[in-house]
Image 1: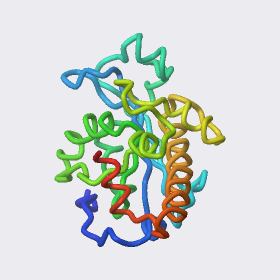
Image 2: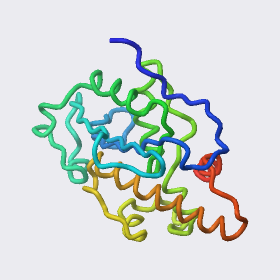
Image 3: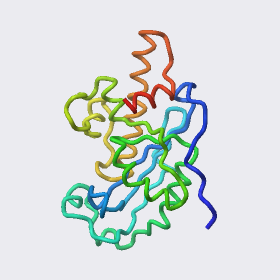
Image 4: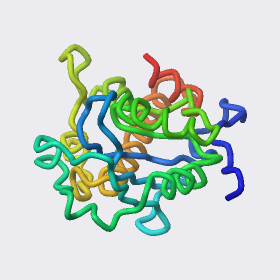
Length: 213
C-alpha cells in the first residue's frame, strides 16, 4: 500500500469561508477511556462551496479488539454481532486519511475526535490537524448555546434549535451529516450578524479563532 495523502494543510486562511473545502467527522467508540477504548465506526461528510451532499461520503465500521461497553451500546447500538463483519482499522484509517486530505476538519465537541483519532493517524505518519472547526464553539459564539454550563451543547439540540433535520442520531455518518448542516447554518448566521454590524465577510481564520476560544 502506498503512503496516504497528508491531512496537514498550509493554505491562506483569510479568504471567505465558502472558498474552502471542509470535512465533518464523527466517531463512535467502545467507550470514553482512552487507555482501552477504540473507534468502532467513523463518518466523514464533505462540504464544498458551503454545501454538502448526502452521497459520496465515507462511513465505515471497525472491528474492535474488545467488546463495546453496555453503556456505549445503549448510545450507538453497535453490538459484537453488528461488528462481526466490520473491517479492520488497518483497512479503514488510510481510507479516512485519503477522504479528509486537503480539507479542513469540522467536529462537534471536537476533543472526542482528536482524542481517538490522533494516535490512529500517527500510525500512518499523519498528524491530527491543529486547525479544527468546532461546531459547539461556533454555537456558543453565535448565542445558540450557553457558555457557562460546564458541558457541550447537544448536537441534536442545536440542529432542532436551528430548524435543521437530525440525521440518524449516534450513528457516525448521521452525526457527521448533522454536524455539516449545523456548521453551514451557524456560519451563515454568524456572517449575517457580522455583515450587519461591520460589513465584513466571515473568513476561515475567524472560524478557527472562534473554535479555539
